[in-house]
Length: 301
Image (cartoon, rainbow, N blue to C red; front, side, top):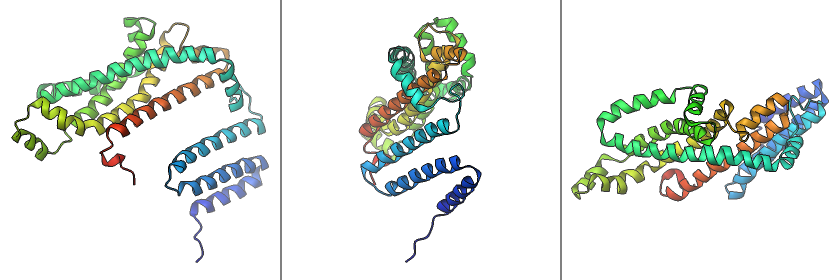
C-alpha cells in the first residue's frame, strides 16, 4: 500500500525549491530546519518518556543552530542580533553579575511577591466563598486592579516601598493576586452538589467540608492559576526594576545595557530569565502532578 504524502511536506518541498532559486544560503538553512522537522516527526510518534524529552530538545537545538548560522552566513551585526555563541560567551564571562541579578530579581523580588500574592489570593477566595457580599463586591474590584497597567503601578510602588526588592515584590503581588483568586474561587465551586449534600448528611462543618472535599476539588484550578502566576511574577519584577532599582537586578542590567548597546548582555539576561521562568513553571507543574495525581488530567494515557 502506498504511503500518503503529508500536505505539510509538500508545502515544505515547494518552499525549499523556491528558496533554492532565491538564495543558496536560504536553502541551506531551510534544509537544516526540514531535517530537524523530519527527525522530530519520527520521534514524536513514540509514547515513551524519552520522546517527550527529545522532541523539545531537538526543536530548541535546531532553532539555536539556525540562529547561529543565519548570523554568520548573512553577516548580521552583533549590535542588531548577536549569535548564540556570543551570548553563551557573555554568560560564561559574567556569571557573578548574572547570579547577583538573579538573586535580586528572581529570588528576592519575584519569589517573595509570588508567595505573598498567591497566599493572599487563596485566603481571600475562602473569605469570598463564605461571604456573598464579598463575592459581589470584591471580585469586580479585583478585576479592575488586574486591568491596571504595570507601567503605572511600578512607579507608585517604588515611591511607596523604596528602590530595593520590596517594591518589586509589591508589584508582583498585584500581578499574581487576581489570576490565582479567580481560579481558586472557581475551584471552590467545582465539587458536585451531591457530594456537598453527602457531607451535610454526615453533619460535617463548613471547615471539614472545605478541607476534605472542596479544597481537594479546587486544586486543579488553583494550580492553573499558580502556573500562570509563575510567568507573571518574573515579568513584573523585571519591569518594575526599570522604574527604580539598586545597581543590581535583571531589569536594571537590561536598562543599563541598552544605553551601552551591549546586546549580548541583554540577551544573556533574557536567557537567564527564560531559564529561571521555565524552571519555576516546571517546579509548580511537578508539584501539581504529585498532589493531583488522582485528577483525570494527570493520568497517563
